[in-house]
Length: 390
Image (cartoon, rainbow, N blue to C red; front, side, top):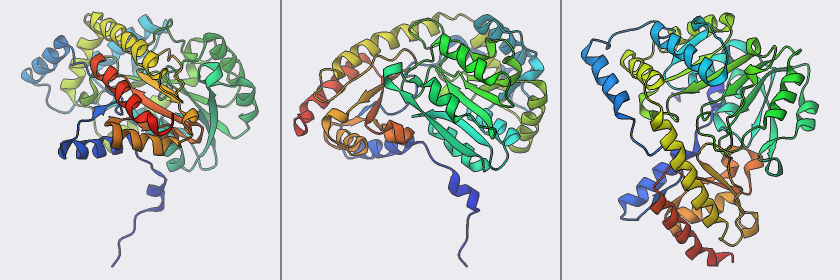
């Protein structure tokens, strides 16, 4: 008998970064040298004081079940962190701690969306947004990010795409894959458009501490928007804790109850010793974050300058995160074909911009979460193979 998967599973997509990583590792097993610029993962170690807190927590017995919503002391610490970083007073009961940030996307969509509801999201954007929207039966409504606007929305087009069926808007600033941020004045205009609508905003702020041009503005800080906003954040990017799987959402209490119900039905709870490490991250010294951001800025400047010397490449300077989103239309080669070529011929693993949505076609994403010498070597490798199109 042939086994058959449920139809809804076909709506889910994967992240191309992990697919490219597998291919790159296979080349390395063959003896090839590959520079990894595909994975969005800080290459810095988790700060020692956070590791020590995790070890100490295990020694102290934090290896059992914990509350589904998260340890009360971590939720209180997150509430204080949101006050320090956004100026918002939040109830710790509205903080949901989950294993990584993705569950906040999934759980809030499952809790809020009905079949046929519309969700506005950025294109190019994190591919899991569209994947999860389709899984719920809702309708994804992509809004192009415009390079000439620093990869922010065309607000007139955004207004035109709003409809009576719009139930959620996804914002991501600083943004993956472009590194763009939404200017404060644009966030204010978005808030004005959404304030009186029956719509929730999922504000993905996972890169909020990795911003080079001022501090990104959360839409939750505008009048009337805190009760309509889910702030998604976590520890993976800010504290280089990708493997610890620790994220959270800050949301209205009525929604937090539903998210906690979904959490208990799926994960029971987040590992307690990682939560204790999370407290150390938020309450401990922050110079590690500042140092990492400063090094990312140095790398950004170097790789963007280098990529702009490649024939057919145009690399805008990203204002946040750790991605260079390079316009490669001048090469005359499709972005997927070019990304494959750079991996196979230059030994530079990068991502096809089209994997982030149709409006990413014509771009390549390079993660500069790698050492400066490796980044400069990657530029030289690309330059050598650019004879194909130059």
